[in-house]
Image 1 (cartoon, rainbow, N blue to C red):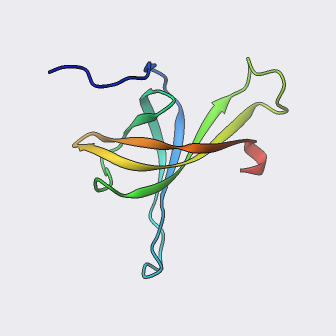
Image 2: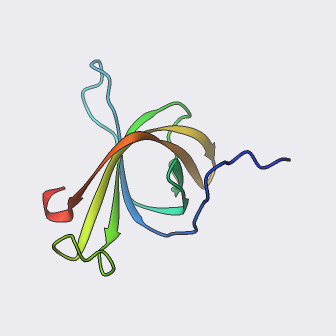
Image 3: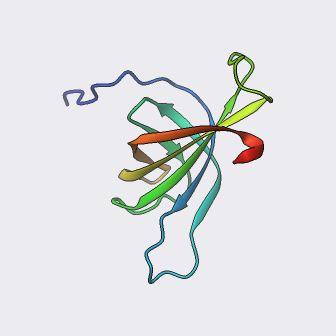
Length: 110
């Protein structure tokens, strides 16, 4: 099978939180806490979970970044807030493609 990925991927284990973007009909939001990325690129990431969401599910993602090397931000950790869509589901996790817009905030403001 030919590799179809165009963006460089990194094996980077980051803690994450994924929240389903609920439709107006849904009352309770589904949230997956305590997730970890397996690999990540600027276009998406693979998230390890025994409860992957359905393909096509729209989600909000919080990726927690250690800030030891990012001197310009205050505090010890920051959070990347980004939306995405589940593009592939396996028994041990799911791949999510990121949207283009994101925000980086100190973790205390997340």
